[in-house]
Image (cartoon, rainbow, N blue to C red; front, side, top):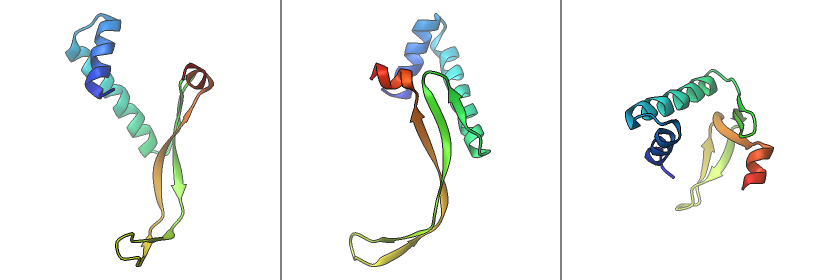
Length: 89
């Protein structure tokens, strides 16, 4: 399912235009992105939780050359599905 598919589904379910649904979907995704950028968690009860995990610096390997490569520490987005989502799937 693509973003366009989601917009179309929201438009049908909410009985609004695709343009309005597109702006709504964009606003939700922007809000989640901004919250994660600020280090907050986003919990959607019954669906799941978006959060940021800290990754430690580590040494990896270049698969082409076998050479050791230093990978810096960083922050990565993560998602933990809620019980209702797990049960539905």
